[in-house]
Image 1 (cartoon, rainbow, N blue to C red):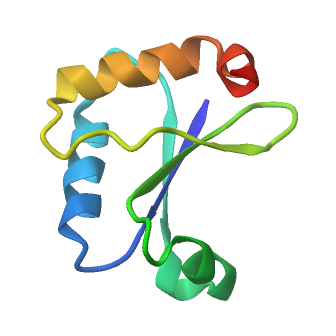
Image 2: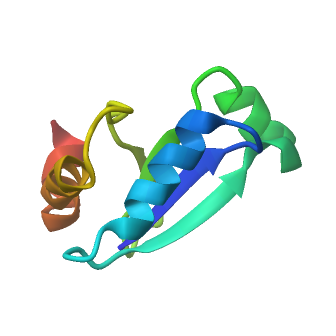
Length: 95
């Protein structure tokens, strides 16, 4: 699975989430960081929303925005939340 983190330089919430995602060891995913200041569409869509974490489902390549985790969530709590979406993205997309 692939995760995309929409972020921008100097965003402390983004940096904190990225650090926690990089510490998760019990889940298999590829993390792509997208700087919203490098693309007008990304900036327009996410300038007031970052950090935004999206799941890319293999096959259809659609982005599914995931609920924003609390900045206070631990690495373990973040891993638990992600495991729900990584285990069955189609089911969660239908909810």
